[in-house]
Length: 239
Image 1 (cartoon, rainbow, N blue to C red):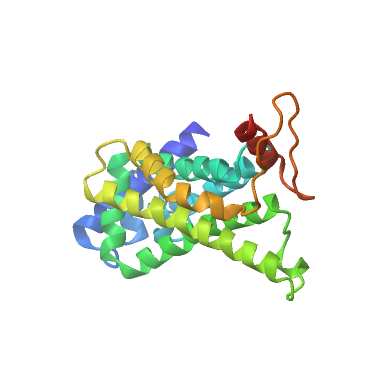
Image 2: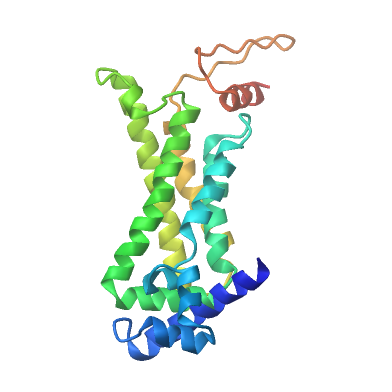
């Protein structure tokens, strides 16, 4: 597995260097393989086309993100779980700043590659929205009655929140890449998401908060289906 990973990295490094030096369209798979010191057939054991050689493995990353969200404790606020997932994504770029900066420069020059990257990252947004819907007990869109305005509004809110997370991630990441990949991009993203989501968190659940009761008895009134993380927050806030 380690050897396979090293070969993939060598092919990616060779592809990026050639794309930057002589252009994407002008570079062939044979040239990439030769520069990486492997045979042409080895290239195709790792990548389908030359475009695939320069992008991080979004399929594998998406599987990790979905697994992370699926395994999140019901006591963890959903926005915390989504923030952690977004940080996992940016960590893949921060792990190899040099390659990430070169990749950004190549995609900036080639519109088709930029569109490829946008399409890939949009899948994270769908995963975040699906997780928020699941936490809110909404299920799939097909399972909703179109006349259920309240559910439709909650689903819309989740879409907006997911879009805000991805937009914030992309904005911070691009700024870091334009700066040469220096600095702590994870810390910058964490701070940015905290500011953005602080304003959106009350919007995620607009149910009225219970007031204080007697010192010795705490009564929490909540609606049927309220997630455990919200109940925990209600109890903690009322203590």
